[in-house]
Amino acid sequence: MQEQIDRLKGDTLGRIAAAADAAALDQVRVSALGKKGDITEMMKQLGRLTPDERRTTGQLLNALKDEVTAAIAAREAEFRSAAIDAKLSNERIDMTLPARPDAGGRIHPVSQTIDELTAVFGEMGFTVAEGPDIEGDFYNFTALNIPPEHPARQAHDTFYLPPAADGSTVLLRTHTSPVQIRTMQQVKPPIRIIVPGRTYRCDYDATHSPMFHQVEGLVVDETSHMGHLKGCLIEFCRAFFGIDDLPVRFRPSYFPFTEPSAEVDIGCSRAGGELRIGAGGDWLEILGCGMVHPKVLANCGIDPQRYQGFAFGMGIERIAMLKYGIPDLRTFYESDLRWLRHYGFVPLDVPSMTSGLSQ
Ligand code: PHE
Image (cartoon, rainbow, N blue to C red):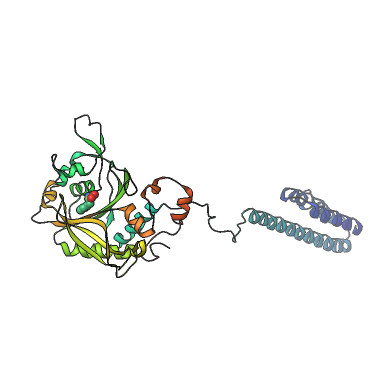
């Protein structure tokens, strides 16, 4: 009997060690400990033995059963941990790799500048509004107090499209100001928006492109006055160019849709033929602005006796060229990768008032 048990033990433990997977191991378990398993069968035969033999053999069989059970459990644990190891090594991540490999893509200076000025005006409580590039004559001109025979229409070098089905004039917007009208028609004051977007004029040289970008600003409420306009734009210029003491001056000007109107210059120096933004005795024009004309408010159904406000508009490429020293406007649209690598911005450096506008 002893011999038989030893043989069974050697054989069973050998098979457990050799089991290649959980299914094979289960077969071993059934063939040893199952209802008709080898150990179970031997247990059944204990009854035929003398009481003395039964006790010693019973102890041996019980010990064998325990040993086999433990061996199976240990092998199972090995399978489990091997499965976990395999899963972990499959899901392995190399933490030493950069989070995002630099694919060489860059943010275009126009996008970067829009993000930057949105951060500055966003901090002041402005929200971003948008309007269509293809406009009607009413929004681009008439509602802005530019009637059909007004000379300002010639100055805009407008691209006209074929007339609409109802005969009305359709054009590519020459400025972002039509979004002033669309916004005032749709929302009640108080209004505080900026409108970055594409604009179109039939003009092409080193400082003009048939498509370019502007950002419009509009504030309408019961109390905003010229002082607020000045404070807002001085603050913008200094924050955008990152120069705390940047000189900013307002020169009287004319726009049909604002009264009074002004153009804004920032200080610069041209010493040695090099343009530098900042205190330097010289001036550079960067935007147009004014108090919203009462007729424009009335054209949008807003009572000019009760409401007032200010508007401004500036060229995005122009302020980008000044801030980043980009000499030629036409290069913005050439899709030259070398230019973009030089003047572009790293995608994860998103401008904000807390992290800074640009590196
Ligand atoms: N729309 C004007 C332009 O394109 C700029 C402007 C906007 C001026 C708002 C005053 C107020 O030149």
